[in-house]
Length: 165
Image 1 (tube, rainbow, N blue to C red):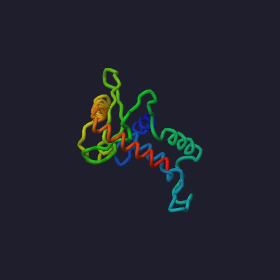
Image 2: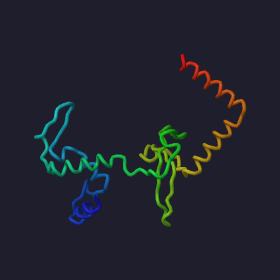
Image 3: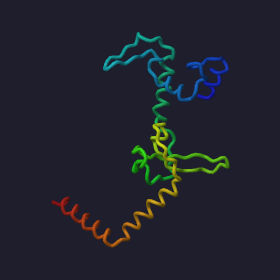
Image 4: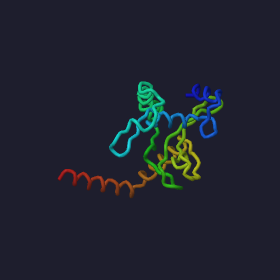
């Protein structure tokens, strides 16, 4: 992708009077109009737009984009809170993120998806270790309280009785 953008820029080919960026290229490659296809409701039209991307290349690109839809996902690191918490500032889900510091150290953290997608959230990212330790410490503290533990056991026994009927 970077090579394509570099060639376009070198040939002074711009997008809306600005150099192409990766997201613009992905948007164009995902857009079926560039392969001459237009869908409206349930109908497919093949003669409205000129085909500027050959179908064979379009199929290869679509396969690769679909395969990489979710990006790289780490299998060696577990994010305990991923898809389980919401931002207290804006209510959007909190997602897992990682990055590499200038010294090469891998940094892992949680980030509000509202902020990530520029929806105006002002919540800063939180280091993975810090947030997970805070949550675990609070759960352990809650379960260490005899009143809370007795209440939970009673509720679990009620659920078990209902399930066995």
